[in-house]
Structure formats: C-alpha cells, structure tokens
Image (cartoon, rainbow, N blue to C red; front, side, top):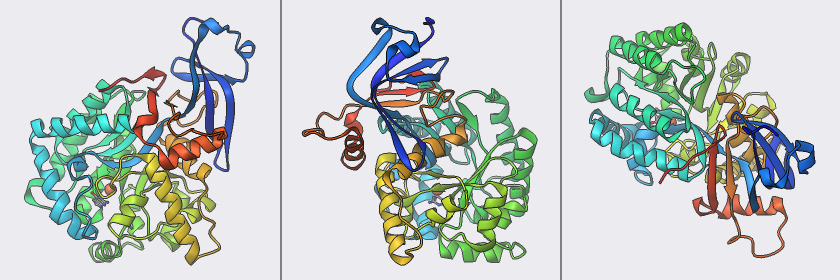
Amino acid sequence: MKDTMKIYKAHLIFTPERSRFEVMENGYIAVENGRVQAVASNLAQLGATEADVTDFGDCLLIPAMNDMHVHAPQYRNLGLAMDLELLPWLDNYTFPEESKFADTAYAERMYRRFVYDLWRQGTMRAVCFATVHLESTRLLMRLFQEAGMGAWVGKVNMNRNCPEALCESVEDAASGIEALVSEFADKDALVRPIVTPRFVPSCTPDMLRMCGQMAQRYGLPVQSHLSENTGEIAWVRELEPESRSYGDAYNRYGLFGQTPTIMAHCVWTDGEELELMQRNGVMVAHCPTSNLNLSSGMAPIRTFLEKGIRVGLGSDISAGHSLSLFRTMVYAIQVSKMHFQRDHSKPFLTLSEAFWLATKSAGSFFGQVGSFEPGYEFDALVIDDHDLNHDNYSLAERLERFIYLGDDRQIVRRFCRGREIHLA
Ligand code: GUN
Ligand code: FE
C-alpha cells in the first residue's frame, strides 16, 4: 500500500443511483490524493493491513452535504421575518440586512459564523450568494479557503428596483467580477467565483447582458433565481415583455445554460420554460423550506427528474430557516407528499432520492463529488448515532433516524477533498 493512501473503516452508506442506498457494513474506503480509490468489504482487496486503517468503529460514513443555494449575508436573519411573501420580504428584511455588508468588519463577523455553521451542519460545499460588495465577497471566499471547504461564491449583481446602497453600475459590476476572476484563477481550487445576477427584476438588460458576456469570456458558471413567486413572475413579464418566459429572459442574455447554470426555486416552471431548461441543461436548486416560509408554492421536482433535469437541494437561508440539509431533505419529501395529493401521477420523493439530491446530484456541480464511487473526491461525514440507536436498527434505519431526528451532535468528523476539516 502507498504511504499517501488512507484507509477508513466504518459502515458506508451512499447513493450511486437515486433509487437505492448502497450499504456496506464494516466496509473499507481507500482514499488517495483526495479521491476515493476503492471501496471494499475486506482489507486484502485493498492490499492493506489493519495497521493502515483508521477505524470509525460502529459509526456511519456518508458523503458530505452540498448546498446548491444559500445566501451567506442573510445569516443574521435566520429564523426571523417569515410574515411576508417574496417581494415585500426582500424590501423589508433582506435588502436592509445585505446593505450592512458595505462594512467589512460586520461582514467578517457574520461570514465567520456562517461558514462555521455550514461546517457544523455537515455541508462541505456550497453555492453561495454574497452581496454586491466586492470587499466582503472576497472576504467570504477567503474564509472558505481558510476552512478548506468548497464553494462557488457570487458577488451579487443588481442595479434596479433596489435601495441606493445595493445599486451598482454595470461597469463596477463588470470590474468586480474580473477582480475575483483574476484573484481566484485556479480552476481546480475549492473556492471559485460564479456569475450572480440577483434576478431579472434587480437587473437591467445591460446588466444581464454584461453578466452573460462575463460568463462566456471567463468560462464561469451562473446562478440566479427563477419562477419562485407568482407576483415576481408577473413583474418579469412586464419588465421583459419580449421574453417568451422568465427563463427565456435569462436565455436571451446567455445566462441559461450557455455555461453551467443553477436556477433556484423553479416553483412555477412549466411549458416552454421547462423545455428550455431541459434543452439547455439548466440545473434546479430546490429550496423547500424557503418555498414554505415565503408561501411560494411546491416545486414540481418529480417532473424535473422525469425529464432528466438535474436537481440539487438548497437551504436558501434566510428564506429557508435551517442550514441543515438533513432537515431540508425531510421538507423536500414532505412537500412532495403534499404535491402528490394534488397530482397522483407524480410519486413523492423517497428517502434515497432526497439523499441523492443533496449528495451525488448536487455534487455534480462541483465535479465528481457526493458519492463513494472510485474517482469521487472524498467529502464525507462520520455519524456517531449511538444516542439514537437504542435498539436493533438496521444500518439503513439508523441513517433514516439520523436524517429525521438527528442534528449536528451526531456529526463527529468531516472531510472535504480528502482532508479532515476542523473548525471551532
Ligand atoms: N429572489 C431574489 N433575491 C432573493 C433572495 O434573496 N431570496 C429568495 N428566496 N429569493 C430571491
Ligand atoms: Fe435565494
């Protein structure tokens, strides 16, 4: 066995396919250069001996969580302000909070807590919105680097229908993107910039066009919001009368799958917009807690999956009230059950499907992430669930109980790209 290889022993559970858990009791996983080399049920298969093994005993070892949509600067508002729908919620609670991030000392205080809390909840990779402020966005990226966790981070772009303090010129927005592109230039790095027009109502056609050009020029991915709320959709129709759908308004400016693209919500997506997403390979960040709290609606996740549209889960704090993707999985399943009651042709999500959404499916936006198949980056959580495991539960039942009943207290070790991540 090579010195650079590490072998871990535990009960391995992961989802190579969305329809089922792969469960390996007392399995071994060999990791080299940050990637899974092999999974085996005995050491001889790995050419190793007991002395080489880090033994996690009776713990579960699962892939770490990937949050596909999260607003770092809304961390202070977590658990607050759930009495309005999207548009007045943005004006009354969200924009005032984001305005504070002009102050980098404030940003550092909040962003440190945010990154720590992501880590605590077992999320090793995230696709983040920051704010329009370049300095504090850079700071958030540095904090992720310092932690050793993975993130696509967007300096938000917005120049209409927002308070003065959050409004920037198209020129400043362009130079902000370029500054981050040159500073975070390593394409293999864990922390990378992503083009982030907030949503169509916040961006003039010039701003959207510039964003599309930047994505194209620098080969950057794109994230935004799509078809979250019926009032928002009606407003986009007024603002972009030439577009055939809300999604088409992004598509016209090169922001809809021309480079890898994530659209959050897609609660009301159907018809031509759905076809365009499918054709362009646009990925959905499903944010069930947010959609419940802002009374946005129930996203048609089964339809997306049937059409082969990629989907991941997003906490979308602070519209979502929890950073835990385990909590988010449960809500995703519960919302899909309500949806099923309205439309019996759409079976609700199973546990393995929800787990797959937060691991392998979401992980695909980061490369080979979210599974324990050979070649995948080793992003993993060690779950010590002895406090929940008071009877003879099977391994699959133990994972189910952890997802439904557990929290960060059972997450005892965390790995990202092969490295153990210690914060605290
Ligand atoms: N649409 C535009 N901005 C936001 C935001 O910050 N949160 C949510 N949920 N939707 C948005
Ligand atoms: Fe959002």
